[in-house]
View 1: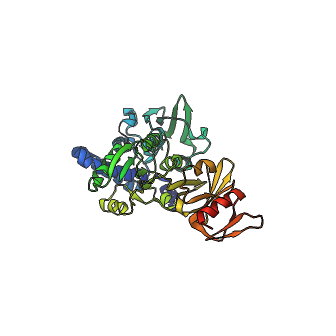
View 2 (view 1 turned 45 degrees about the vertical axis):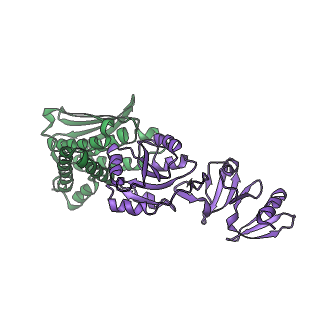
View 3 (view 1 turned 90 degrees about the vertical axis):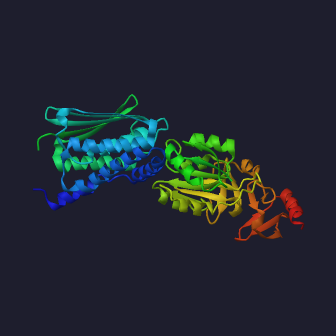
Length: 200
Length: 228
């Protein structure tokens, strides 16, 4: 049984929806209402799904990956409206991984981070590749984006550091040392990999 | 009134354009989707007003201002950076939060002053570490040379800008800014009184009490200007 302190710690670490994303999305949707009302309707529905998931998830500490993946799809659809041609996404979930449990908003946080660095800061945009697999009792979530690691640049990005540290801390509280987050960088691609044990 | 829209998101630019349609006095001279395009567009169209997004890939809105010699009137647009913009000391006309409320846009536009069309520098952007200012030249009482930089004195602040005193002087209105000596240019409108100094040159006392000594040569010129 988890202590109240443990639960509070986990809640504090759970990712909040980024306000920049929130208001920029609403602004894009306002534009879509005139340009493409059907698409605007679809985006409002996705926006609601994402908000609901973010507001409701904190009462249960893990969800099936398939549920998290749906929300990430909604998130990516909303960001595609903002970034248009600058965002190219490849998203694959191994069928064997779909029913595995993940902490909510964990894949979302990785993808948001990838967009922030791989797309938002690059005028030419870039690619984001998301891949989930189950390997020998471990769920592996890989998120890659175009770009270089912030550590390679003089001013490290503190928001991102906090975001990544929060993910690490959540994994530690939930799984001890059996889960991990690693980052690597090479050939103009940054890859974040989370490994989560599939048995509690 | 000629305006340009600078925002990395096409939908955001289109949306602002639609709301601006209710204000026919604003002519949209162009759009830019990043800082480099914005700099080129400003050079090409010489706008009176910028609608400037703060967060953009590559150069941010602040970076764009830092690279402009003459700063037009600026209305910032942002999803969530209002705190960064409020930290701005003066003279950003206003900021608009996205999605932009048409009534809010109207009140921001009410603050726009008609273009003077003087062709003279009216505002400069100054950044000193964490602090940024859009400074009206009228508020600057003294410009002081510091190597290839110039120290700008206004409203109790005195940050450095990355332009030489000579480069700045070429763009200033000679009816307002006067070269006191090799090191300093003063704003004539800030002079409170002029006395004869011990070395024979004139000494100007500004309205804020600061004194500036003219070189011998410039003392003569100041006499002429002030008809002493």
